[in-house]
Image (cartoon, rainbow, N blue to C red; front, side):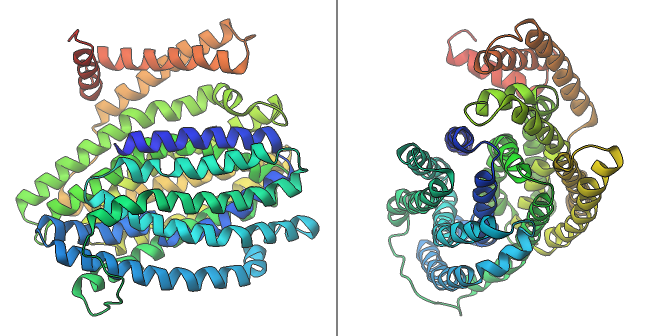
Amino acid sequence: MVGAGILCSRLFGLVRQRVFSHYFGLSDAADIFSAALRVPNFLQNLFGEGVLSASFIPVYARLLAQNKQEDADRLAGAIAAILALLISVIVALGVWATPSLLWLIAPGYTGEKRELTILIVRILFPGTGILVWSAWCLGILNSHHKFFLSYAAPVVWNLSMILTMLIFRHLDADRLIVYLAWGTVLGCLLQFLVQLGPVLKLVPGMRLRFDLRSLHVQQVGGSFLGVAIGRGVVQISAFVDQAISTLLGSGAIAGMTTASSVNLLPVSLFGMAISASELPTLSRLAGDELDADVVAKLSARLNNGLERIAFFIVPSAMAFFALGNVVVAALYQSGAFTSKDSHYVWAILAGSGVGLLASTFGRLYASTYYALRDTRTPLRFALVRLAFTAVLGLASALLLPRMLGIPMQWGAVGLTASAGVAGWIEFHLLRSKLNKKLGHTGVAGTLMVKLWVSAIVAALVACGVEYAIRHQGPVILALFVLSTYGVAYFALTYLLRIRLCVELIDKFARRLGIG
């Protein structure tokens, strides 16, 4: 259900990005909106989905497991009241302090480009504050095992942005992004409202009260602070990349944003979906005492989730490396977005493939720490990641292009690749520390070899198809090439008797009545 909801959301997100690319390409206007959208998103990520899930769900889910509905309702109301006050203050401060914030995250923007970015950020800030409320809804729905709605809700957010661009497409680019900012805020409100009704039915006894003395509220608050700082470090890492990208010339940040829309699809669909759906179950399993039986169950659950992630993320990373040009061209090559832009975004996408597996594995390891109420360990390792991201990013983005004698905008490729290297360092630290508590965890080496070999062979077959029909249009080309790649990967993993593939194909066959 999480996967299905995320798939709906991401597909509409890709449509939104295609419409955006059609009208803006990799222009200055695209740079402005891409940078502006990231600024208030810091608020959403700092107090929203990831943080609330990691701090609120473990406590709330345990109360539900113990049949303490009244205590659970009281906790939900207290957290909602605290969020209302906290977010109102931060949004107001954010709108006021936008000019100062922009010096930190977009130092390369000056003159009219800087002024228009400030305006867009100020419009967007209240909308992203509303999205924090949406994350509160997600925490309640997930704890009750109502997974689909909360992850499909962003569909209305994307629809609002798409309709805004289509309705006001006759305007010039600078005016259009202002209207797009207001359409984004409307989408944020709609995303919250579609979840509010079902949530209120699940918490019939909820009251908005500041109950800071409650032990359960204090438990959420203690975890919230540690996770928020950890998430803040991750967001600062992203902002470091963004700040560096503003120094690489026009189109760099828009290119990174476009590549990110593709990169986030497997991350969300497999990494986030599996981590989010496992967190409530891991929290219930963890309980209050970590005895041998609990350790065995947690370890088995974690390893099973890692295998599922690897099965889907390995071919996704290989597709970024070998077939990224086909993917990007099919999705975005239209209007102002040219073939040259497609190859540039493909290079950035290939760079992001370096850390794709590490980032998705790391999400599930972090969820396991949160289920054990350990928020400090992920925080420490996130700080290590930040340090490596900053050092490696600066060297890869600003020094390598000069050394190689290539245009500075290609530093964006080194930026995403170096972030992937930092992600691998963080992942290995997370796994090593957790292995001391749960014993050996991870995916078997033989399984990883089989997955990579299957993905490489499937990619070679797909590249052969691409060469044979290379004169077809981008969409037709992608349809044949990517379907060939997918069928070849599943066929090879089935022949190698990889358990997850065999189970999936057998289930599918039984659904068709042929198994």
